[in-house]
Length: 450
Image 1 (cartoon, rainbow, N blue to C red):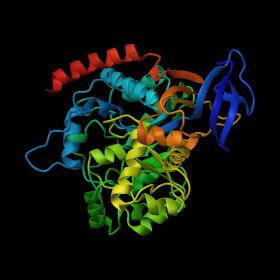
Image 2 (image 1 turned 180 degrees about the vertical axis):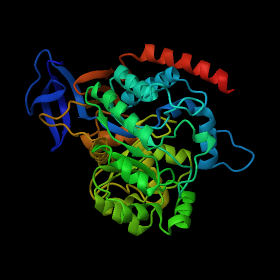
Image 3 (image 1 turned 90 degrees about the vertical axis):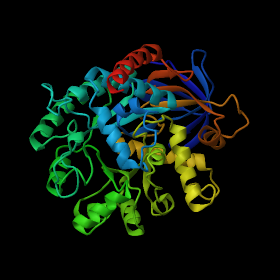
Image 4 (image 1 turned 45 degrees about the vertical axis):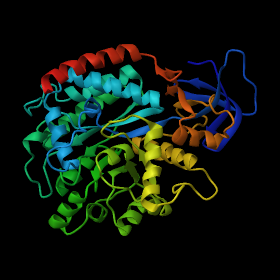
């Protein structure tokens, strides 16, 4: 426990306040006072803001970073990238999956994230059979989260089919596949994993409308009252396949056939028409945007202006984990809108800064999608991020967020997760050991996949 933290500027649930002192007890903000003075033993910072949640991650894909940028004999797209990803998954052993996840989660913390939503679908052994411990790979995710200290919302993925209409899965998907009975056992085991981790949350993830039938969707969403996450409308081919199967677009079908509400987080939701966009906004669900991955895969541009005008909520995630950065995700989100609309400061409210709107949205929407409370207030979780503005001390508070997201002038400094400091001076407390194990795992993995 820190005896006290003093911030000259702090972004609370009620806005910016000055000369704030807070204390932490049992992972929560115990006291929070403003316009006061620091005590002698206090840890002092210039700027403290709430740490954000990374709402969508496939941890094992961090090992692929930089390995899928070679063009094939024909034009490349999401579907050709997916085949490369499938082949890569065949080689990963459980201990390697844990080392990769620990490296990733350490990097997320250093980037200013306090929690990860692990959309976990690498379930099975290399031949597609279940491990003797059906939650072997989920336990590896839990161990990596425990070692690094990141908050975890575990989202076991139900994945049963290759396309609409309950088509049989392909061989490339064999490490992902469950039926109802085996998935129920996985969920029971996952609940025990979460129970053993401080502040962890268990949700559920029907992979996509391509991978689950309507009956399966109803079944799996009834297995927990936690968050529900689903990929949807990421690619135009998915929209075309949905129309061919059901006569409806993916988001249109979901809103017509399922009760979508604040529990839900729809990942990507890139290709929506106006009625779907406003309809999704009205449900209170979160749009889980992964702008760096969506750009890397050539997915398309999310209709942010219309969605936000309709009252929509959003958060950001790093998805394929090709690059880890809170500022990178938020910057890419805004820049894609600028390119699409040929305008500037698209997401900002009139008279406000773009960085502040992006940051507030990511913090609140991300927390909702993770099933946790957000913001800096008394009795709230002490998940905090201090920002180093020493390179640009002339920036005002909101401008400091702009400097963090757009200009690289302001850097992540310290990160606390549920009251425990995991990052100091931009460096994770276990960086050397975690990185060493990751390098060893990658050496073995690459030797088997070359």
